[in-house]
Length: 141
Image (cartoon, rainbow, N blue to C red; front, top):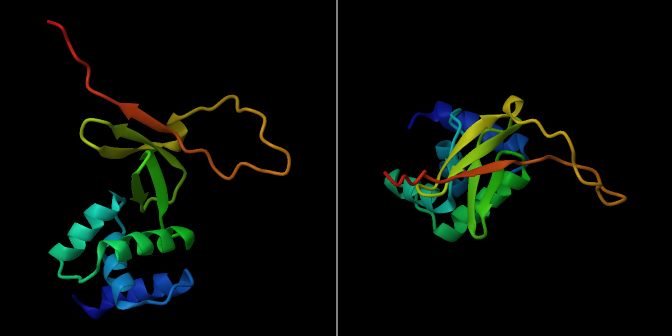
């Protein structure tokens, strides 16, 4: 790996208030390459192993949550115990394909929410995440 990508990643981490440790640098290099990704902790751990980045699964989980808290990732929870981390920070929603576990983006302009319930006093809406769950059509031919 050249020094240039690491220089960019170091800058991103520092601007987010995170110290650029060896583990954070390696994982950030995999995640923050400019492409939109939806990745689970397990998938990132495997990618790290494939790229000779020595990091435990627990460290991957901790780092993903640190990146989320620092505003570098969004967490998309598709069901209890199953979360994806999204590198696309723009306003958008998701299709979740239940059979394959794949998740893809839906542009914000394609979702129209006309009415919301009354929110509790003293709170404000931070964001609205829509996950459209899809399953294959079963045909009885």
